[in-house]
Length: 499
Image 1 (cartoon, rainbow, N blue to C red):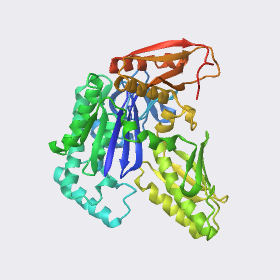
Image 2 (image 1 turned 60 degrees about the vertical axis):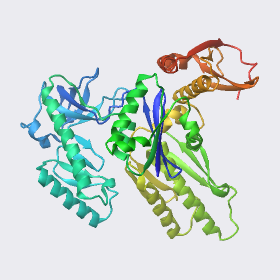
Image 3 (image 1 turned 30 degrees about the vertical axis):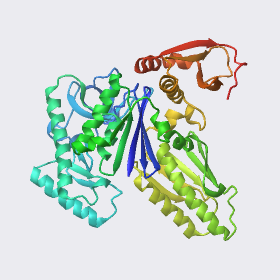
């Protein structure tokens, strides 16, 4: 059974998915940056770029977006002339956020995700998730879906998702009806609008994940909550709305937690430690080391003290198999993408290498990102590629993606934990933090834990720049917990025991 544990913090919401006690994944959703991927817009052509077969579009944002027109001949009823000119309107979906000087990237191939299917606006094909391997199951599902779309007179195509395996007609039909209604509503709204704007929001990553994955296999959803903070109420109601669709009795699976650090209480912080570390220990003294460079991620497997007392080759194989399972889990939870090279302990037998590849493929079976095991290179390195998205875990928790170093976001989460502790455990409404101005050796936050009398006293030292950059977060923290945060300048630190 799965548990969804939600840390609903000011700086970001986080959903940890625990499956039978094992950490499966974490989704991080910033509250202060727009996550607009898959949003759908009514846009207007503002400039043609003939050399690139593309146009710039006004989609209601400050900066224009970029749209390739390579699929224009498939656009159908919305664009009967199969050509677009400056001033024309077009329905587009955001596929890549703007970054630096690169503009946001859009497509005219609209897709609407359901739990079991994905509707394709500019296609009539029935496609399958690559993880549905059985041809017999594919043929069964194709027959069911073709029957449904014939009954409904649907002209769109569909991708059959992995979760549809073994489903019967009724469940698939309900999902197809839902995505078709969503798309129909979007098209109607597109025709009703006159100016460039968003006409469909895909919602936050966490709400979307719960919507697609909540079912009988979910034991409970635990969510932190402050009664007097309106934003928490809105978020909780969105979760209730999703759960209620499965039956009003399912609402008992939602556990609302106030005045406590849910990630600490449910052991998530302890589980997360190994995903923030450069070195990860395996059984019997073996370990792996993960290093990230600009070009790729490199993983090194070491036997450590585990040299075994029997067959050496069998010992090495067992270490490598254990490492393969852990490495795939690390890649998925950390959201590592791009080129990944794994230096396993040398194996002489080709059949042992095949066992490693089989284990990696099996472990990546639950990955929702496209990945490929390319095999061993001539130098004996296992080559893996994984589709890029956002590397949210490392960007959020680690400074510059470097293991064992805290980012600004991680430090702010620590501050909120101290506020919870101070308010609900120390029964105080004031938290003192210290600002470093002229001490160059302390570039980031230093946590100081000192025992004063019979109570545990917490203080934080921050860099001035961080407090300035994140002043909006501090203001919201004060409002959420109805507490005062006093910032004091600190120039000499020799009297503190710094760890």
